[in-house]
Length: 376
Image (cartoon, rainbow, N blue to C red; front, side, top):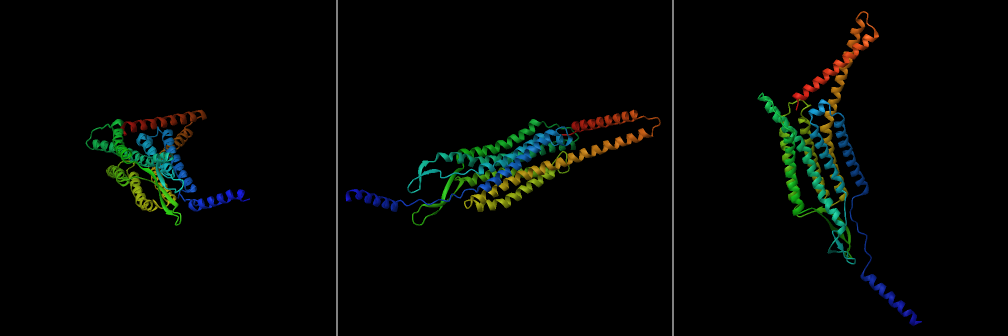
């Protein structure tokens, strides 16, 4: 009996000894973004995407309208695309990962072996500043270039000379501003890119195993590069605000000076209110940081879209309403004149109405052609 029970007793002692040396690993709280919060962020991006696509579709549908042509749809398309890029940064913000290095299976400490699964998360980290900065530059450099074009034409009109500003020259302004921003971002990408890092915040008092950790994108010089991008965008916004003030007296069809100024002030208010909240939430709660950052990105892009496109839609609708009202009134006058004429038949009345409608369309086409020749 002892021969058979001896190995079992030794095995029991071995298992008990190893359990005392290697206790059970506790469940670690990774402090990830809540799924419901991610869904809210995706919905915000979907709303902005729908608004940008709708704005571009409206421009294409009414591309022959005087309001759309005078507003220079090339620049409005860049504004819509820039707003979409800013809001699309919500998507990579939701991407998270574990530890940057593989962990020891017993102590759960990080080793020196990199974790290959984190490479995609590192790419998402750098995608955020690229999308936000390039999107903002596209948004406001397009408006900036348009205001420069308007100012040059205004200066020429004051000296009684006709000035033609080619589109290639104006788009060159957008290209220069975009290139400067790309230089800053490429330097950031090559010198000290953002990488995913997870830090242990709490450990078990007995086993020293990590029980809570938090992950975030970080690098040694994140403050310096973020400040460089912010200063460049701020300089563009300041000069655009100056140009908006100088062209404030132009008719609305040619300039959005008022709404550009409102959008810049609106953006500054968002940054003043959102930056302290982002600073507090960073490193504390990923769900709070994500929802605040998503709201700031969404409100800045969606608000700019509304401020630039909705007033034009209203003006376009009012102009069409006035033209329709004028056409109806002219038709009524023609009917009255036809009915008052002696010996008029139904065929004569219809012919007069048709001729009057044709005259109205011709006068409208002539007016539109003159506006195109004298417009921007």
